[in-house]
Length: 162
Image (cartoon, rainbow, N blue to C red; front, top):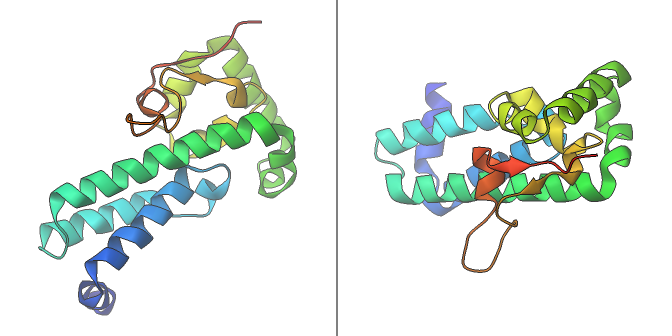
């Protein structure tokens, strides 16, 4: 572990920010969150910030922007390719779990999306659910001058009824 940290501390900081941001965006994107260690990456960025390799402001900005971008892309992909996403890596989840997730979103709507934001596995699956792709964020993803889907990230989302 010490060798890995020494190696990372020797890399250019721009590369660390970029790779960490790609991992975090990939973790919040549809299905990739089942494979990509987003939380571990955030902990590593925190450690590298603590020991002075990275600066706090740019690290926070890059990680928040990556999470918001990945979230917006996940819901957009869920809206467009929802059922097809289940056939790829999503088939490993199993039809019963997908059915239960669909039922939860149908019953809870935006409250279900909010609750799923705080559970890593659920956060990854919600955009691919039958209704998850049709959740309308309170702030449109990547609006000019806004910076992203803050509503979807912090739970201020609503699902259409019916």
